[in-house]
Image 1 (cartoon, rainbow, N blue to C red):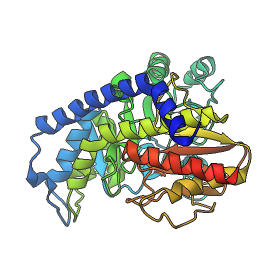
Image 2 (cartoon, rainbow, N blue to C red):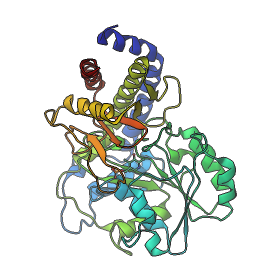
Image 3 (cartoon, protein in one colour):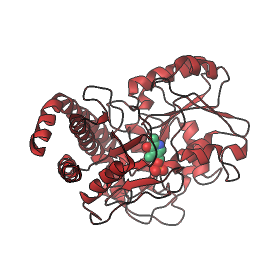
Length: 407
Ligand SMILES: *Cc1c(COP(=O)(O)O)cnc(C)c1O
């Protein structure tokens, strides 16, 4: 089979899944559209502000729209949030106090949170006297028996990472999360359930907050920014918790009353409006890569008819140089910096050198087609994003051509 035939065959295999993805996008598009209409969005909401930003209607309305989309009482959406890690840090520091316990029930949280939670002398949660407990996953799923036991200690925050991070597993579906959240609420109703929702937004018709999560947190240069938000993060959840987090975002007593933005809010609004569709394009791209590479004999995730909870495709390579070659091929297929050859480097917050291919309009935006991986065994490439499925397909073609030349 030549490359075109391989891709066409994979698309035939994926037809049913693609249909479901389109239906989900339609449902979520309507959800977002309703949020815009119910909040009477108008041109004036795009206007920049400066100084304190008192009564900044662009900011406040954007918060309201995210709250509606996630079916929560309140939300914070801010260009001052530098990354997903920053958003998660705000959430954790906003909710936890000295002596409290943070319990992660989906294994160790994302790599960059290690310094945040258990770092020493860097202003971590541990430095402020917050304890950390973790229940490892069992066969890539929740270890309900172990979780139930740990919940008896009534941790202040129960933390769940939805996406796979840098590990060989599928992301959790909302149904999976619903079970874990129900258990947490039953055994320890006072605990605040926080979900790291990075890469999970708009994958399904429901979000973690629809099944009982108290707070969801994510990055705007991933799914909900729709490829247009230039930076930022969001937190959505119960009003009491979002208020606490707001005091951490700015200052105690001031919270979300201040915060200006000297550029237009338009890309944030337009981004979340585009997000359901862009996520569908990224999902289709991930599934196509997984299907075609599986056909070539590689181990890949997700499976065609398996559970899908994020926009990532994992491909397992036999050796580091193959993994690096794959990421370099993705970079070469990018619209920006296609002539640059990415190399592994010691990125802040990561324990291993990481290679990152991201020839993106927004620096490092992984809702755009990108691939990354820590250089460690097993050699897994994590591919995600794609603003258009057409670009995903072209990149896959180019990637396969590169492989054919080096094989
Ligand atoms: C991307 C990501 C984060 C945050 O990463 P940043 O690079 O700081 O935006 C956290 N958790 C998960 C699961 C992620 O995928």
